[in-house]
Image (cartoon, rainbow, N blue to C red; front, top):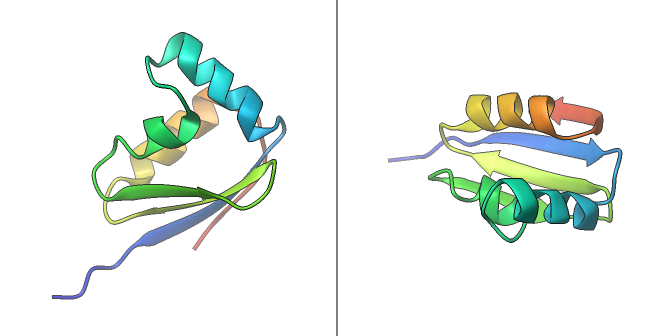
Length: 79
């Protein structure tokens, strides 16, 4: 069986380390990465201070909805 993953490259307006602090205060997790990876089959890989690659087998729609609502996004590309 082959799994197909959605891929998202997101550039945040604020550094990811600042967003980590937001998650600690409001989401009951230590980092944004930890929150995103709490969704089954979903992974986040920071590639720069502001940019991360997020992959998910079937939860991407929920991740994108939450990111748009709660994080400052400069650019988001879905693949």
